[in-house]
Image (cartoon, rainbow, N blue to C red; front, side, top):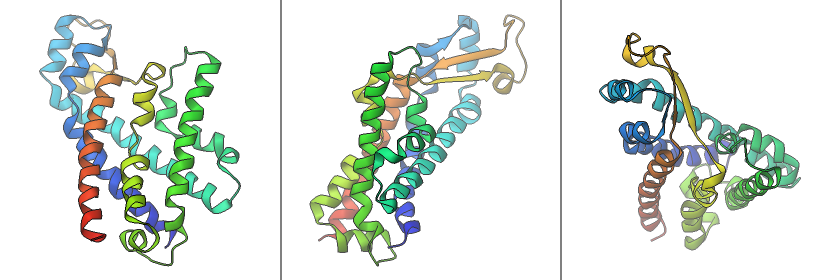
Length: 231
């Protein structure tokens, strides 16, 4: 199986998960719980423009997450093809990852190392899980999966290795996701009661909630594919 086909299989899962996250994400919940600095009136104005906030802030954040995750997966495949071991790619894998980018800056070095080790272990396990597919002569993701994996291995791949919220949920206290934006990009102009148009919204809990619900729906769909293809 070509490397490109493995990427296509992973990207298919990721695209569906990101699209579902966009549908699940509640701008109003994030604003009410995580807005920093603005007055209540300003938050009300933003809530009344939730659609614009979704398009101009949330969707770009998720699209950046998609790109970073795909770039990171490419490096995971580099480590698999190199046979050098994941530790040799530690800095490369962590430096491009959206999840690693969200580690809080105020945690201790020891705690950071613990969280980074957990993230790296996840990528190591993902690489090991897709390695048989990378080395398969099949040119299609599902053909390679049926040929190279047992059904329980395919189920483990989509249930445990493709989903990406596990580290966020396991180490919730170590992460903080913050989006900064200019209110004029959402409201069109700066209201008189708002002297500073700069906003920050901390949306970690809402992101984890939305991503987890999204990936569960995608996992369920992938399980149905497995049931059909491994029957």
